[in-house]
Image 1 (cartoon, rainbow, N blue to C red):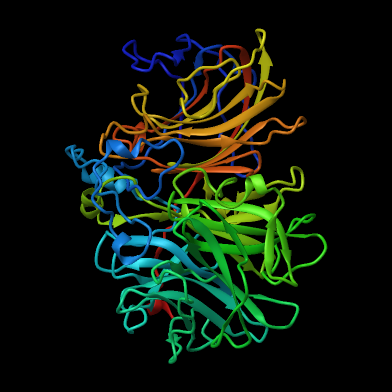
Image 2: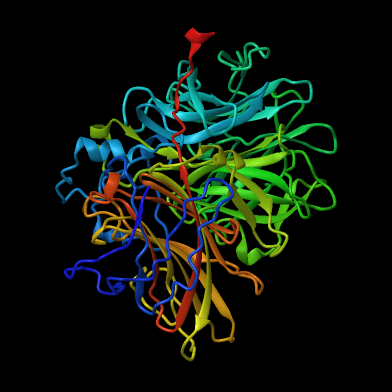
Length: 622
């Protein structure tokens, strides 16, 4: 992969990015393998686009599919509203049929579709995928189950796909784990979670949609625990084990969590639902055998105005420590994370708080940052996340679904839809005490090679004032072209030579009326593709930057996916982009500074990442 300097043409469309002179400083990036860092010192020019272009020589890409509506989304009134796929069956929307109905589909090529498939993110060989299900570690193998349609690239006929890996990166496809073949799940084997019992047994609870489209909870378990691959699964003959309680909407009761042990020696699980259409909540059930359950009084937690809670996750984190905790851990030095996927907004929200063992109630540390009204797990294209405790490395690992923002027509043309994020390790941020930290699992480093299209980028920025600062009201919504005194500055990824397509990932510090600096971390997709029939918006949030810290970001770039981590994982943004020009050897990476009042010093470390070569399990090789 060569590093060259930019000579931007005079017909550059995006005026806010001013090119450097034809003969910039000879400083160049050195491509590190593991420990070698490339450092660009004092790359500072007001209004300048640093002429660092990283040639990426591989393949092409196309489009996406909208499943959630972030705060910066386009007004709903601008779209016609046929009901999205899945809603009439009691799940969150699984298509964007209305967004671009008045526009002709972009003329995608097979080369673009080929490029759009990722190299090291998990996705099936073909067809539709959504939520991750029941991740676990068993006899040397990580298992990932996932919502899958074996017949088409659109949602429906939901079956449990199954894959295994020894390192969370190199996956092998296995036969389906469960199919919709009983009255209690004939309309779909929906989301579920695994619990590993102390005696070695594995209990898998999942939501089934019945022949009358009622959501019930079912039990399954491996047919042969001695099989490391857990290929065969048995559905409990007396399913369902839990039906909707009185007063609960029968199509708003789903996604049981991993169980945790209470002080009385019995297990608890929680299930998402809603009350009075608008109150999101999580019910708690108690069991001693996983076949019979008692609904406990009250709820684990509820938040008015948040709507239906699905894919609820509930787990402990250590206040001081660098390892994860088993789901049953509690006591001094422990907090609990409660996370819900909000059906109304298609966002994953979480909060940190305290779990009362005596009452089975959870209370947020900060009620103003409660579930659904405060922090998000990921501020980008991300939903239906689920964690599991990896007992082999004493860590908690997070999965999440990256859904599409193109049209169903284009998904059918390319033959597949959706990707899973790179697994992330989750810890409590004991520096801020207000958020979790998410970081790619260490195994991603096994992909580092000498030359490839996929990148792992670490960037660090320092700023120096060159003019008097002032109070400004800026955030992420204006994108990277919205210039302010202290920002934006960052990286342009998946960009072509002329900058007609680019995806800026950037910081924007702003001065507040209190005299402090508040920093935004943002991803701007608005110019990521020349195609008009894909959903492009600006994502972002404020991020804590402590007084002794530099501005830091890490980006995982994989063809059409960018996972962006700020300040060690305090905030994360996943971008799903569909370039038509910035593909194969025409994809570039730029540094930029679009602030009006600061110089920026940037330090970069860049690793090339190989493909994970995900493929079917080689049964013929014994």
